[in-house]
Length: 191
Image: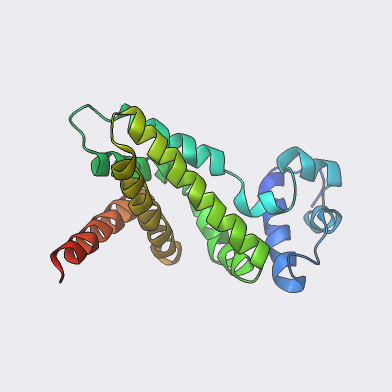
């Protein structure tokens, strides 16, 4: 592939994931990723700040979609319904292209302590963003935090369910969030 061909970002992601899988995240250099993709190192840095962002890029977009959906929810919408709307709003980013790389991405993250920590911090960021958005709606801090944490739990489980089957992530997220809420209710009832 020539350097001028389209889809540079996707080519870089594929090259990085393949190299991370073959030789380990820590043993892979940006120059190797660019070379494997048939691109230059400067092209890599036009798309990503560093090699870690190949795995975690888009976090800000997801957080913005979540907080935007919470803010846009009508005044009659309760905290849990607002969080559900936040999860459904992220569906626009869950494309077939993203799904194609998802399992390999999770495998690379699972094999590296630094990446697992970064993944956990990403989820904390989502929880904080949703908590803040709920508090701006007048939801008390503890309730906002609980609703956001349930949302993050559903987001993670929903993503893992979506990867093998695809389809509409919004529907998967909605179903998963409903199941998380039911599980919380069973705990409350002592079932």
